[in-house]
Amino acid sequence: MNLVVGLGNPGRHYADTRHNVGYRVVAAFAERHGILGVPHECGGCFGRGPVTADGGPELDVGVLQPQTFMNRSGEVVAEALKRFPVDDPEAELIVVFDDVDLPFGRLRIRPAGGSAGHRGLANIIACLGMECFSRLRFGVDRSPGIGTADYVLQPFSESEESELDSLITLAVEALDAMLFEGTIPAMNRFNRQSAGEE
Image (cartoon, one colour):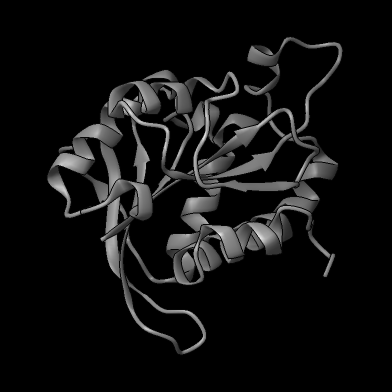
């Protein structure tokens, strides 16, 4: 089974913040493929179902939104990997999260690497004891006048929200490519692309 994890903070208070864009991308992915997420004993909202793309082969895919706060996301991911049939996390785990070092809406796919200061990703790396799993970063930009911790807990601006649906759709397409084409081919397609670009 492939496992796609979206990072964020639980609760309505955080739903529209920049830090929760990972949740939103994974929710859109699940909706596209008809996967319903429900609370699970692993500590997250989990759903599982068959996923196809362009009439190709069918994949068994789980989607997970940890329901701890961001800096404890790794506990849920580690528990999920114990409970679910993810045979090879290096090949079958994808983590989606926000990145303040990327311009708003820019995507960055990587097959491995460090946390670059992202607390959710850092906790996953610590809990799994490994850095070799795929990740999809979604750029949320940063504000020169606001500290990063405060900035990511703010909602997107009105103009950003007006663009967000199309950007999230692009991120879902990137997830499909990672699953069906592989991380490296998806990198070549999406790492320099923003919504509206070919």
